Image (cartoon, rainbow, N blue to C red; front, top):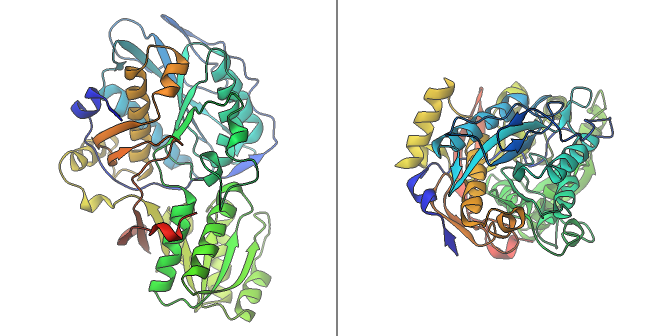
Length: 439
């Protein structure tokens, strides 16, 4: 167990929410060319401006290394992810752009394309190659989408020198860190070809969030539930874990089906759900996979069915008015429960950006702090940074006190259920999932 001294000095910040584990996109559109060249930043070589911003650095002298973030900065979730970038900048600035004796610059990189409207598999691959081949990159904060992480993690794992450490603020796909329910065959071993782990996350897995949603479905009186998924890594995974927990809790799962994000109408799907006798629907997936249209058609076709969704539907403005009175789960404690340094973070970051922080921001800032702590504890090599992610402990951090285990998972796993009221999510109840419902 390791606790960085700088973690104690900085950021006792806040145990807030986490949003979607996997976002839009995932197509095969051509992305950036993977060129690692860019504007030089003193002792470092910047990543290419084709996918990344200029180096952000306001410390003394010149940076020794670069930490890159990998997020989808185009499409439906752009407002959330661009604010995450600002939260990462806030975090590194609070640390005076240092990690121990090392001076750290930051570059924000985009893994999305305008055509895809979100993360793009080719772009993820080219970004991963760029990080791996540019020896100035000592670590990566990302990704937002579990599917993109499954592309980048093995590339970073094979980097020479390496492996390159990566910390995600949002991935919840089970198979990135462990086998079992919600994971695909060969996961997670296939992401670590060197046999060494290099990936960690600060957000709860889907085999925790799905059961929490099932617990809530039972609590609000749902007896027959129809389970939907968007056919993506995140959506199918969280739907699978929801189904298993729902069955263990005695709910009748009357359907398990994927929806096509390119459909113009879900009237037929709504009719099928009504005919199945469902009094509740779990929507496993993300809003940007035509989720708003799906919600609208469900409420029109099955008006009495209660809708429950995971954190992929945690943006009320994107959900639309049809989701009013429905529920979405988000990892972590609600901001209103935070005190001390957690409240300080909310107040200070709100003042900086001029609005109430998006819950994603807490996880983005915390992920950067974890990376900086690992760099501080390292010998200055990429492999050492990756190694120091595991067993790293944060005391009174942004998300509270937690430790990353040998798999790279956090032991801080409460899930809060929110009800959509207008353009806000109002916290209703925070759940701790019993072990017999997990994985």
